[in-house]
Image (cartoon, rainbow, N blue to C red):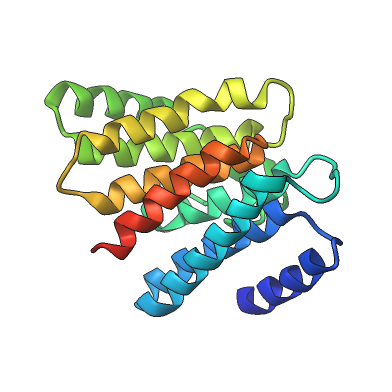
Length: 215
């Protein structure tokens, strides 16, 4: 279970046997799981713990140098989008979310093959001024791009920044929807952790936590 995985990551992070970035991603994912399960108190506790780890990263950085960690970020980001995808069917199979490397080539290609239709839908939604739906579709697009190339370190921050900046910009145009803004800020924060830009990651997540706690 994810709770046991998180406990093991806490122990490893305390002993400097894994990165604080990995602990941060797992805590944020766990908070989203608890929120989905209706456990607001558990979600808030996980967010506060993640914010504390992010504050440490922003202040002192990782205590050790680690090799590329992008696979952890990509896996949990893709997994966070599962609820927005249609149910899998024999005619439309879906990847085993959270285990992207375990899906067959045809399933992966089918999932990524939805990109042109999603881009066209985004264009229609933008023209119609349907910003909430546009924000959701753009997130689904970003998740597919992350699955396709989110473990490639070359120009990682430059390639992905536009997707996450757009998500926050769209969400800020929805002042009556703090949950969407919190989601976009959290997404960008976790991406910035992957890019090792810890100070802006902390600022984004601190704003997201404040928005969620004020509901």
